[in-house]
Image (cartoon, rainbow, N blue to C red; front, top):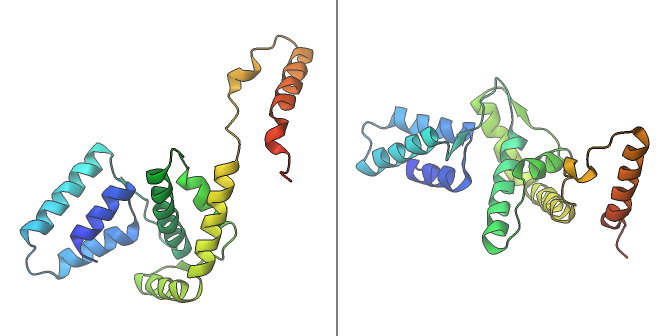
Length: 179
């Protein structure tokens, strides 16, 4: 992948993954000279990092390649959905849900990570897509988080129970299985 494509992807996603960072480093280290376009792309990336438009995902001593693959899939799917609808989805919730249903693929070296990525793309791509889609479906139908002020500021234990009971009755329909 080229520096320009990596920067474009990072700007689109809002994230710079460790593998993207490593690829930019590899290109910079192996190239005898960078083009004007590559320098301009790196300048755009630096500006986006400084303003917080792009966030660097933390580097670890070991990596779970499955996290990268799921996060990439989730970001791409969420971007598609948010571009075509008014829905707002939480990439972190979606990735966590999918990761809890997928096998980990740990590696401690770039060579190991490359092996795990190739293996996963060949053998697990459909399963990853299936679990990310299931996570998105679940995220789309989940109820809005509880607003702590919706229960009011009770003065007694009885009032707490009464407020909670009223809130549960009002929101129970969101938890009923649909026929």
